[in-house]
Image: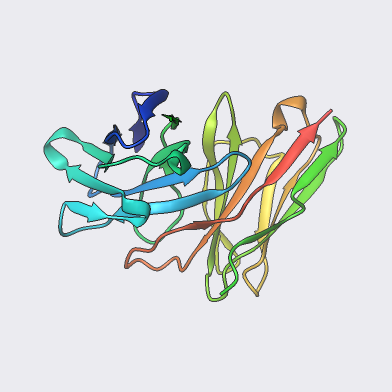
Length: 113
Length: 114
């Protein structure tokens, strides 16, 4: 069965500092991996996705993620965090062609001035 | 291109009642999925519809049902509401093709059961 673990429930970083959010997945076949961001009371916005090919994927808002099959990880990174990045971040694993995604519990990001 | 539209945005219902939520996908998208989001359980997959057929189903009781119309719009129904059904219900649409597509989410319907 597919599952996702986000080990960090809450992370606080200073504005301008670098960020790495961890995601580990369990999936029997080639995983299709996603990072979404959610602001309070809002839906989810896709930051980036990995289907195949280059293991380093670039997303919107300056985010990137690296797929590491050997570690079953898909960590999200940003070199310099902005106050507007404060939100909840979800990693998800899915299958081709459908929306039956499994989400991690989320990591809440707080940005200190 | 308009995004995924969910109506209503907010609902308050009484325990025992039933409720219907609506989702209009992005034009051209044939797959619609529903998710329940609660503080305790996080984001949980309810079901997915593709071309008016339920293609996948999560682990929810039969009180939760859905359907999809020929224009790909989808409705979700919850009968005999319980307090624990209070949640943000999110709808996501995608092309649904096997070539690999991403899901776009609506802003959700906040259901409160009192």
